Image 1 (cartoon, rainbow, N blue to C red):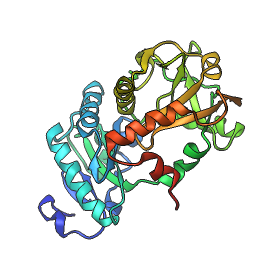
Image 2: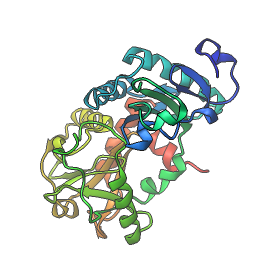
Image 3: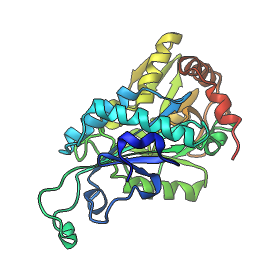
Image 4: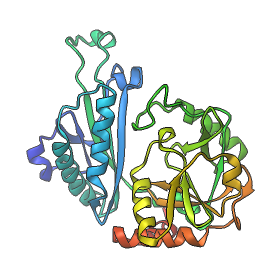
Length: 314
């Protein structure tokens, strides 16, 4: 293992696991970790612009609110977490040749007290804490910018907030794995958008969903979705541009009759949706308001977001 004080001397990408920087390939959890045995884990994800973690404090604060709700006690506080993030990104960006990075936070409830007994472990579980990075695979999202996304509603519904709060970012996503499979039977490139038990649109497995109509952007109500950091950024950009923003119940009817629809998310910021359940949205091509908002996002982030996605290659 690599002690934090010697991180600068380490070769290759590192991860942070339970208080130490370790080679990324050695960042592993035991099979009896509660994050594996019962999915007792919360997470968050940020990306860099110019090597700087974007909206770092917002992501870390949401992570710690999620931990509090899930009764998971992280071994380090939020300030220490941000310090680890900065050091990890600095090192791993150099190891990745200056590439922009995505960074994952992963915190579990620790080791299962029954299963871990087989390994001779005793005492109450202590939280497992992980940070790791990866170079941003912009080429994967290129088709979203050049052609637009096709969203499909699978038959299974989103977790109701009465069962698990929508406000936390967690790893209990088996229903989304199943829903993605269903959507891909319709279109291998489709993105699943989940309805709630009342038929209202909620979100995808990795982004929020909003529509543009009558001069304003409409988002599903926040009790039904994980309110993304990128959704917050979007509201700020819309305010800059003089475009209204409201929350309301949205159904499939609203999506197919929208002028435009978008996916706000951390990796690629804002993607256009051009079809919903096979029906073209607006002209069936990425819309002008989307591009106007994305260009403003680029100004704020200090990067050419459209260029880094649309111009990417493997």
